[in-house]
Structure formats: C-alpha cells, structure tokens
Length: 177
Image (cartoon, rainbow, N blue to C red; front, side, top):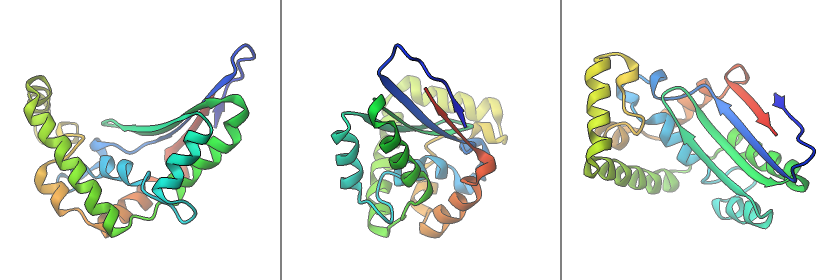
C-alpha cells in the first residue's frame, strides 16, 4: 500500500495495480487479462453492475480501468470525503467478481467489437502487427485484446482460474493520493 497526502487538494485518486497483463498469458489465453478487466465491473456478490455505476456516480467520481502488457489497473477519482467509500467499492470489484455467464457473453461481444475497431484503425492494426513480428513467439507479442479466436473460446472457468492465480496479494499494489 502506497499513499501520499496532499493537503492543498480536495480530490483523491485511488488505484489498484495488479501484475497481470498480456505478457503473462499463454497464446491460447490471449486477451484474458483484458477480458477479466471488463468483467470486474459486471457485478460482485454485494453489487450489480448497475449498483456499481450508481455508487460511483453518487460520489461524483470516476471509476475506470485499463490493461497493459504487464498490468491491469482499477482506479477511482473522487472528492477526498468519499475516499473510504471509493476504496470499499474498488476493493469489492477487484476481490469479489461474479463472472456470470450472461455478463461474460455480453462482454465477449463488446471485446469483439473492440477488436474490429483495431482492425479498422490502420495505426493500431500496424502496431499490433509490428509487435507480433518484433517479439515473434515472446509473450510481449501477444495483443492485449487477444484475438477473435481466443476471445470466442474463453469461458467462465478460464476467467476464474486465471483470476485466482493473478489476483493474489503478492501481485497487487494499492496506491492513493
């Protein structure tokens, strides 16, 4: 846990960084880290996706995430008076995802649309091709979004097993300012 107090500022930023990205995926799992990132916003044991969105909105805050080759980050920006509530919300989504089948299928469609958008954006498409060629069979050559084939093949069990392995305390840093 890393924190810094900035007395002159009334906002707070909180990030949960997980050592989990495309470089840690087997070729048949390409995109699983990014898929999990999507799923963490789709409900927990205590909150539905709608409740997650309503709660951050009620704080007047922002809740988002991103996945890179080496990390996934879940973050919230709120007024300082809402830091504890934001921390509880982010903790819940990172520690207690449901991975419901219906939500998996919805997010699969969203990710397939993201893949299509990359294919339609020349500079993004060329970057992915360059990375795959430069890194050849190295995990850094795996696209963060995965491939159409891998995204279509990943199921609930795959997501749950990868999540359990990656989201252990030794792989997580919590930072707040």
